[in-house]
Image (cartoon, rainbow over all chains, first blue to last red; front, side):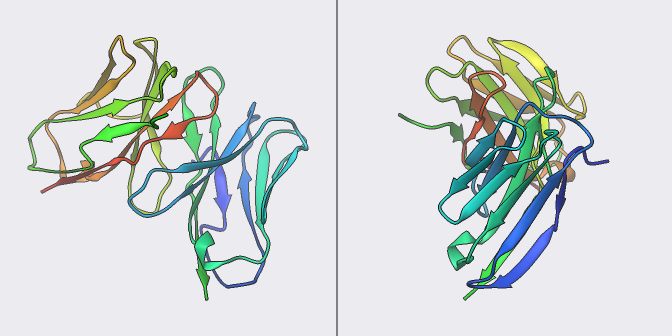
Length: 111
Length: 111
């Protein structure tokens, strides 16, 4: 059982379309992080959301943390081929020292 | 400032052999975590070390071990390699359970 469930797991869209990726859990997280990873590289941190209901924007990317701090979403406006990659959400599991990842969303943006 | 550095970047080993992977954290970061990632999936937590003490351990067999040195660098050791150990091994550093920054990973292939 995945503690952090991401959906969809795979998304193939045309350039210019909008999309939303979801990260859901039955557990409360003190914060959630979103990463983007390209093949053969390590994940690169995009944003950390900390406060329930928080919304953060990074150019065409909008991140939201659920009010109960159990879920988060990533919305991309007018996707571009450069947005192609694996998007991962992650959260620290209490005081266990474990950073738990979702299974990832593979995004392909076609020109 | 240098980011997280891992060595080697690629490695090919034979079943039954032993491997040591190395990680240098971002300067000032005292926490190092190790993750295993198979293609198309999210990273799976292996270990976290903080101030040279093991803080967390994931669901991996005893063939996996790690340690952290006084300069906060870390090694991940895997004994009696199996074909299924082939993966991208990622190291992350953080200031404790805060934002984690990843290295580029070590691609291990077991043949």
